[in-house]
Length: 101
Image (cartoon, rainbow, N blue to C red):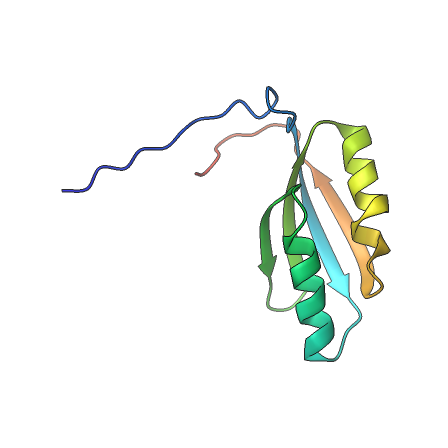
């Protein structure tokens, strides 16, 4: 019988108290651009979940940062600086009701 263990980490204590959900649309028609975008975004330490979606948006990204200033730095210094990014919509959490692993 398998037993699963998991650590519960205080996100705020490790400088990741603000979680933001981001919808991203890209302007790319070739596979290389999509793959380059995915490699770049996946490499960012702030990104804790990253999915390519069917339909709109093209991508769903979940980031964890220290605060609003850190999110602004991520958004303006990294994400929107990628040439193929067409549209970004940020969703900040008001209250977490239930969180998954």
